[in-house]
Image: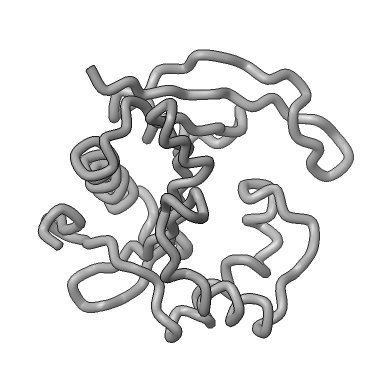
Length: 174
């Protein structure tokens, strides 16, 4: 699908071979704050998830894609969640796994590709995301692609014994 290809990366569907990638991301405690996770996932549970990953976004209200470079290296994940057909909106989340691949434009390219897909193929009117107040890279990323900060959720997430604020961003396709 040409829509999911960019200059340096492309987005692809989950494959059974992605079990170790997802296992390493979901069980990395440094990412738990982003995914709002409290406990690790077993390979068995992730395998069951992958077995169901073929289901349609209209049925499960979400879509997870792998961010891959043209050397076929899986660099991270990008998600559409809370897909709302009636109101033509969805949430979006992105994670570049390894530090070596961050701040190199891959996340921005992946998000641009996903936005194009959401507006041209899913006919969405808007996307939103939630970003912790101290996640400078994500704050900069979403703002650079036209997402507008529309709200502040005070003391929203508890992390390591204290509460953090979270911003809500919104992109309306006009």
